[in-house]
Image 1 (tube, rainbow, N blue to C red):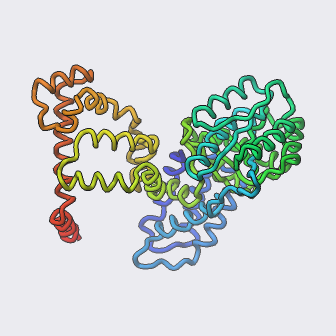
Image 2 (image 1 turned 30 degrees about the horizontal axis):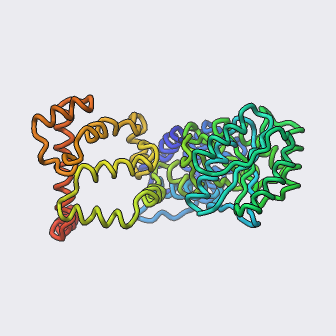
Image 3 (image 1 turned 135 degrees about the vertical axis):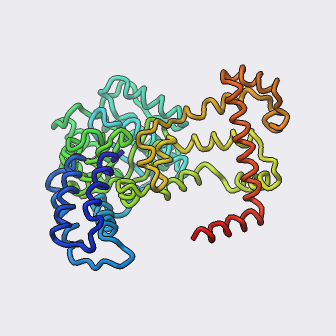
Length: 443
């Protein structure tokens, strides 16, 4: 996401390279290019102009420190303004009420039902809530069945009333059911339409008025660009929602909706959907998104994803095995599985500062691990725990069993052996001291 915008902004900042200081002339040329970049990203002209005017006002007359170049200062100002444009700080969901009621609204095809299930999964696994999903979309074919399947997949109950086509009544009955059965969050999925119409608006307004939700979220497909912003405005005028959810952001390389929507409706973006899996839902952090737009990576989110998968006890166990030089292929395989749970590999690598551009045109996916997994799975448990015993005949059998070549098996075993040695050396006090000495000598 945002790849085109990131490239254009990088080219814009190069206009200031070699300049000794910021002037009205050179900043005007740079910001003209920045405005074009924003317009190409499907940001509205009004928002793009206001953004560049603000940046220009802050940049003119800024004193340049000897350790900071004009282009670096411009990046800092643009970063701060992008963060402000997208809302400044992250905004949490309101859980007032017993149960807390979350109303989901949006157009048909925006991803409301999938998001409802993702949100339930997020609240259950990350917030230790007991959510109940409510199938309030009584018009779209198979909508109720879709929510049932998604709910079953994440082990969250779905409240339905077969044959009842009155969404307000269903929602009210669901809340009563939730109170009786001790659910502390109710997520109401509502019907959408192919376009904004009066009937839909009246219905969602009636649902909100009757159930009085603690949180109303508007779900919008980010790939529709400025159409998403216009729809957001229409819904806001009718139901005054609390926050926005951008879905399919992984498929949108422009990102105009994310950059514009807060300025138009003055409501925060609270979540972004980045895939089809139930755990592919991220809290929206404006500053982190600004980092990614400007090619700075998002190391904080990467560390958080890692922390979600790796617990302290497992880390201690591995540390002991590495120190004793008993780390084996079974341990290695377990670590691969944990990395895969963190999300798409290319997206994860792109979060590392400086790596987003490097992997932009490289095809990296989770299938990259398939041959490694096949090789290790073709070994016996004893071979995985004691790879040193894997001789020529065993390698031949493992290659045949995994559908790979003997050369691939040899390469994996060599790489594992080298990695294991390095990890063991680095785990020792002497190894850490040598590394620190080498780093000091490079300065």
